[in-house]
Image (cartoon, rainbow, N blue to C red):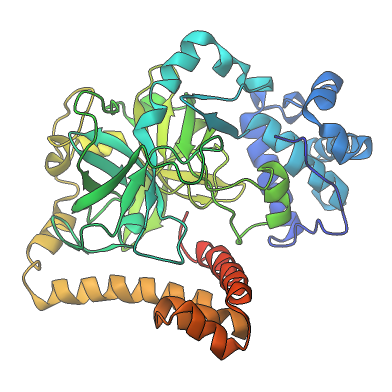
Length: 454
């Protein structure tokens, strides 16, 4: 994946986060993932791997810079780290320890370094068998959104994804959801090796069955899912899972909130397709999620926007341990523990859990708040707030576009004028307008992706 990494340090700024803060976060993360928590022991590519995987394209000086950067981190000399050393740490050392791999067919690319164990035949068969049950949530009714996130099969006819993903095409909370059939779909074949017009595993969402009022979780009802195959959901507590190896399966998208040049190098400018991203379960952390402060499970896999709704899978068992919903660069990724959903009586009976747990009343206040207001003005107000938030994200993204791009989208996709009429108003040929609209939509998608949670 590193074969086409090109170095131009004049373009590498890393300035979307203050340098010292980035260095401190990077040191903390690399120390956490290093054997024995010793940053000097963190894995780095040897000469053979550099030659084979194309690290030479970053230049030998930057490989050396990564080494000197590690030394400065170990000696707590973060203020002395140079741009080339920061590049080496972010583009060489970190991806070596938290890589991303393409899913191809019903398997995935081999990995090197600390994750070579994922190439073992037994492990690969275990994980590969789950890949066809994880798909990309599509929004066919939206001409400008490429997709909404990730979803995976969790029960008879049911797909789990995030609440913030479902709210792109549905309104409401709890079990009373407003949704127009056909506004969403799930595509299990959006992979790097699949043709763009592949539709053999594309299924429409018939209904949104649940949007959880506390956790960032939603259930989609989809016809045509296999009746004999669904993912097995873990009932282990996050404390039991601490330090376990996991893989995150999802669809990372280019994220304008962080350094895009660095992302392009690491992801080889290939986004929106199914990826495997290994990492480790870490301690729980409280984080704001909508109107709630939730005690999420954390993991340290490399994720981007688009990973929303990704399955977090325990490597040793193949069970789903969490539902990814957000991340902070170089700090933590947050996920809904399956353990907590298994303790919710409104959820547990619907899904394919590996066992049963005693129910809890921890989420009862959140459920009561929506059940008591489902037929009231409060419910209407909450739904309108959700719709307004989505509209505001679209409006903000449109406002950032050049006037010509914004006008092209307004005329063709919002006012739905014909291509010929749009071309006439722009005083160009139809073919030229088509190119303009394509560029406008691509620019909008990049900006809109930066406005929604990961």
